[in-house]
Length: 280
Length: 266
Image 1 (tube, each protein chain N blue to C red):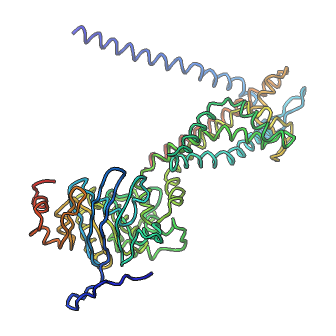
Image 2: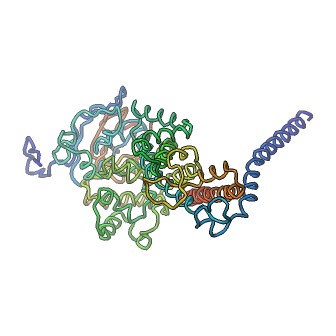
Image 3: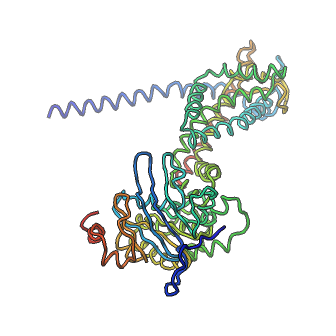
């Protein structure tokens, strides 16, 4: 009898501990959101999204070029990184049994653990030095390096979930193996792949370090891949380390915009994932 | 293509065409495991061969050797000859991809492509091989042959997964027929289905026999007796006996066959 009571007491204690750790984990999360919204919301306006940064000392201005630049760099990075990451994952899942597969897998794991600033340096050496200038392309290369390993592993896992019976169905219809991989296996995993890609994109969108000495920054509009380009993250960094109060406020608002952008991407991927679950 | 000349001209009284399928001394190994041992049999055009035997006796392995599905399994080794219309499918100049287009296969569990509509599933064999065009006629013909047309004609654009298990299996049969094969291999096509769906598949086999040569693997002996002209009994990788279905079930030559068909083991 008493042992039962002790057990129930232990049960309650453990549930209480779990609830307490959840609450504790929520503190930094909620405070980040709260602080960014509190400090940043005041600066939100139409011109903030459309205008160029105002010169120091003048009021107003925006980060339109940085928003566009971020989209531009991340878009370029996706164009480079997604085909390579997904392709590598497809290879690992379909043909990655031998030593080459294990080597690729090991490399991806190491690459995933490399600090992003190091990837920025690699892109500097590979792109900025030969081109002789900072550019959106260099930033995109650095971000693509960042996206590839995670995407490759996620793709491998997703492809492995595709039932073997579907491959057999396709092969038994006289479809060659490479077509089976591309048009049956990849297509069946498409929903999950889309989610993984959006998560990789949102992660890349939040990176500053790889962009600092690759895409650098730009006070003006730019849509050329071989020119230095503004990005939200670098803009925030520059504003935050400046001595001016107006720029500090601009940094807060830019941070809020970045947060909303990333949240939007995450939300989209969640909705897509849920739609996929309901579909099957 | 060179048609094989029979070594001995058949007597006029037995003026049947050369067999559609000839298996000669077939052995299949998976690394150290000897799964099919020295199997030889023949099957006439437009007839049904049922392959029966207890689980693990090599029935499916035998079936998959016919359309070279073992080519894709690392460590699998196939020896012997399998001739279709006199031509050895393991000959060096035979492309397994092309072979599989002329030898259709239906699997144990219905496996329609989940990301495709009913329509697209039927023509998957053509579309995946890059044949574009309007396949509406072929879809109707294949679905009619698979006895599914009337049930799905109003929802060809819905997902293949919206169909019941039995309908999905008939869809898979239609998909196999749409590439216009000469032979149809069926690997326990009704074992995952309820009795009504099973009866429909069996009825369908009777109809398909008019046009196709069919090899069906089943561990349901009554099903073998109902659908087939000839029956082959496999046990431990060996072909124990192969003969007309009626004889196998009523008057088998081998003791092991009799014990199996009367339910003494298996």
